[in-house]
Length: 213
Ligand code: GAR
Image 1 (cartoon, helix red, strand yellow):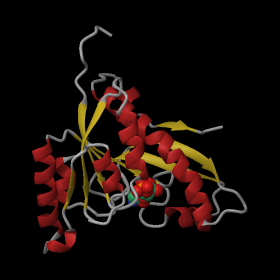
Image 2 (tube, rainbow, N blue to C red):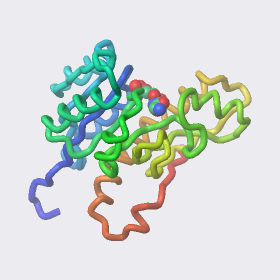
Image 3 (cartoon, rainbow, N blue to C red):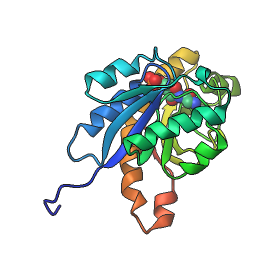
């Protein structure tokens, strides 16, 4: 390190509920050496529990209800205006349960990550933990991936792997997956930012995985 202050990437987090993944990103970003700064937390639901934590951490928050808009497009335009006003450079979806308009998703391609509780491309969409149990797989996990207009279909950046146990139901499996989510999201965001300046495109494009022992 040259001793210069590194310029941190300005990251906005979008949530719809509990916000436990949001917390891990905020905590990671409190480290001066971490390459991201969390500049704002947005929720489409005023009752999202994660909003209080963000405020306690001194992070600005915004709530816009999708119910106040006639169309997905109009809601996403309002969301986009908020993100632009914050100076957002990268978006992290963290339990954000709205589907984006195509225009919004297109605009932020390469600048938006999501975390999903399955090993994508398996088990996209809702209830992926139950989907994994129904399919009878013996390993599952979580994926941090790039967001594209097609739901849960963007390039995987980092997988976290967990076993599926005979005694699992969706809740038990989900809790095991959530633990690995909290491990991988801060790592994935850091890697993603650092690789975005990497000319070795082939290396930067390979998904990585973590299997906690
Ligand atoms: C997490 O398990 C996340 O992977 C999932 O919602 C939960 C949010 O928890 N996201 C999705 O299913 C997106 N399709 P959190 O609010 O405590 O981070």
